[in-house]
Amino acid sequence: MNTTITERLDVIQIREDFPILKREVAPGVPLVYLDSTATSQKPLAVIRAMSEYYERSNANIHRGVHTLAEEATAQYEAAREKIAGFIGARKSREIIFVRNTTEAINLVTFSWGRKFLQRGDRVLLTEMEHHSNLVPWQILAQEKELLLDFVPVTQAGLLDLQEFERLLSHKPKIVAMTQMSNVLGTINPIKEMTRLAHQAGAVVVVDGAQSVPHLPVNVQDLDVDFLAFSAHKMLGPTGIGVLFGKEELLESMPPFLGGGDMIKKVHLRRFSPNDLPHKFEAGTPAIAEAIGFGAAIDYLNRIGMERVAAHEHDLISYALEALNEIEGLTLYGPSADQKGAVASFTMRGVHPHDVSQILDSQGIAVRAGHHCAMPLHEKFGLPATTRASFYLYNTRQEVDQLVRGLAKVKKIFG
Amino acid sequence: MDDLYREIIIERFKEPLFRGVLEPHDISFEDENPLCGDHIRIDLRVDENSRVVEAAFSGHGCAISQASADLLLESIIGKTLDEVKQLNKQDVLDLLGIELGPVRLKCALLPLKVVKAGVYGLGEASDSLVEE
Image (cartoon, rainbow over all chains, first blue to last red; front, side, top):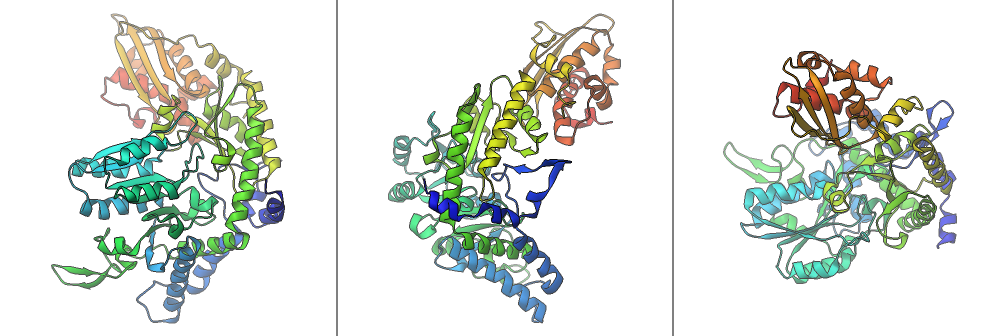
């Protein structure tokens, strides 16, 4: 499918932009990086944007009036604008810089949750959530005596939407769910689920850690209330992420962390909070990282998210077909048409750690473990899986290398 | 790397000599590696001189952790509990005959951690039990 689009995505050229992809893991063993779901690699444009900031413009932002402070502030705020445009937010003040997806969700639970949820209120989550969209709600539920419900995952790796509708009839105050599973790759029908959740009167929080890097995502089209994602999974640096929130919701929320920059006025015994988005950005933020994030957005925009998604669809279709041929290998999750470029699997008689260790000896980087989704693994009766994941810089040849690597695993464990 | 999967490790993973549970037992402890979900339980029987006379492990994990458990139990049969308390990281690596990076080291050391926590009668296993 989409061969014309895929051809237009010049992966060989793209790979040239990523210095790390040229390295060898051991002498004569080139890197095959299939772990972008954990973190993506960074193009030179992102690395340069950050080092140029440190070499030329480094200063603290928002307060100084000297040239460097002006430059730093302008670049930091320009990054915010780019991100707002990238996800289709109406205003850049709806973009809150945080450390990562985890912190973004904690911001919602601490600020919105503490103010608007009361004892006995229900929170609706799903069984396929990453720990980052489970534990913050568990903490809040303990504190406020909330009831947690979970949309089940079917054996096919999809959310049970009938059950979702039934659980909505209990009138949850909030629905928090991932747009793309980091284990199964499942892409959930967020737009329709959001419509139903809103009908039931719930606020919708979406974990976009996996979807925003890999799919075109538009918050106005989806109509979600909150969207959380991290820069490092989308070509940007670690240490910076975003909470998008609808303006009226963010306005209604109390501050999250207190300190500098989040205030308008401070007296000895009280303060008044700053305007959005600064109300939620206490202390000196990750300035270089925000600028690097902005450069990552520029890079993705130049290529186009439609083309990124089409390329990845081609790769995962090819990979699933090839992996299915391997005797003793079991894949988890839906078919390629319903998922992103994530392939989680087990091999009969071999622990996932051993699989990934033997692949590593051939330069192939995959992930083994429960991928921060222990309840999902419990559901499928698995202590762990091996996960190969793909991004815009991966090729079909690398899928072939993975398949050859797995043949070696079988040979060793014969 | 091929060294990592030395014959002895694959052999003990596939056909362990000490897999099972001992009921009754004198000492039993279990723990897991939260990073990868490896789970190991170890049961020991000791005689009146505090010497280990029987040992068994159960649970699940990778080849490194399973082989490490099997080789470790083999090595402690006949040792006194005081001698078992003296075992450290290097003893386990010597048994396995391999070098390990920081991530896989946790797999290899989990069985020793569990044995020592059991022998010391601790409430929970701590990494400090297997540090040098």
